[in-house]
Length: 204
Image 1 (cartoon, one colour):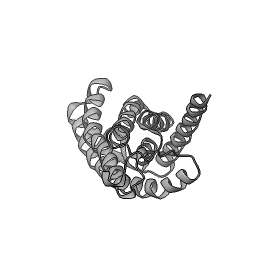
Image 2: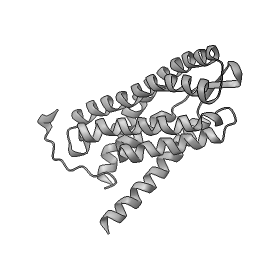
Image 3: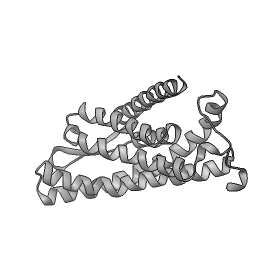
Image 4: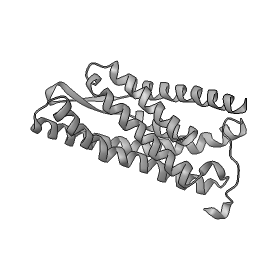
């Protein structure tokens, strides 16, 4: 019964974080038109994908970003063709962030604020660094070989995407670390986040 309740809770949290990813990307973005009728954008959607991975784990966090931002792409005529790429990349961001935070650092076993802060930074950087590298590269091959865009145009779009993605990553890391370390004690006190305390403070 506890396992079933836990799964239902995780699914509800995944849906909530997916909604935050959707809203933050759809309504809080600055769209930058680029040649060929395409666009890149300044946004904080990735921040909520990473935040979800820190709070509820890599798989559920990745699904939050993939579903939320995938739907956002599908609802926008400019981004609709990129929805499959978005789904895969956002899921990978969540998986990598969750791997570092929960499998390597095991932050949910620590009550040491400095240790948790340090690893929330490292995990966020890891997930978003992957995106900074993968997004333009995957985007280049996706646009050229799947969407059939000319090589020169695909290269130009990849370079523009790389700049915007790097900026988004820096802003998102700062935002995630601040929000996560601010809400973590509240969630623990409200029993919405379980911390076992197995890792001692010396682990930092």
